[in-house]
Length: 234
Image 1 (tube, one colour):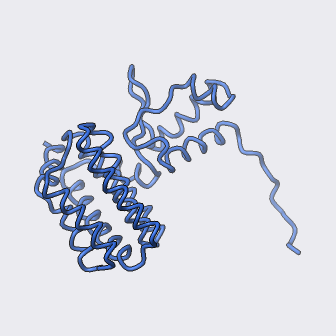
Image 2 (cartoon, one colour):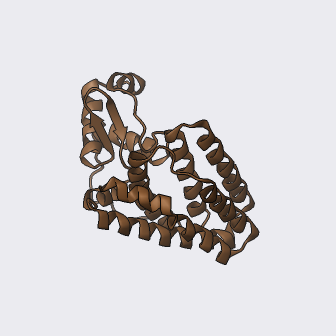
Image 3 (cartoon, rainbow, N blue to C red):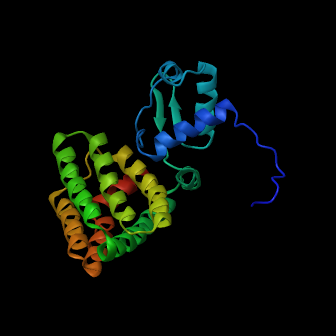
């Protein structure tokens, strides 16, 4: 038997409920980073609420740094978590971005090492499929599809690490770096970089933590990747 409940139950305001649904769309990747979301009218119709309610919910997520409204173009996803949005607000110089890349290298290495030690068979199969999707997206010539596929591949490895906190932090830092790369180059890829991704997936599948960590950190040391980050600040 539980003790008495001293706080009254309060119904969450409608705007907050709608905003939380939008957050879930972002969290789950239904609304991907950099993607334009549906318009106010479409969202209001789908949810059965007023456009004013939708507008206020979108405004709340904009203030949180998760959405970026662009006049005459629509609203785009600018962050996948409040942590990602906070990091984006705090990083506005070349040194900050370089530090973010360095931190992502550390996180990638840690995630790869742990994934190699404990990834399940379904997780390994998922990583292999995403590696193939990444290659297909690159060959399609669609920068947005390529960025999304690359992000999904690395996130799958972070999730396979077995540490959900590591995956969440990786998401935040990964969003920051990927956003800068997306704005500076169309397809930041070359044969050597793709081979490193293949080596990373192979090492994780082989259960070789050392090789997986080496491949993961090498990816972030790729000259073209760092050059793209520097161009963002020039």
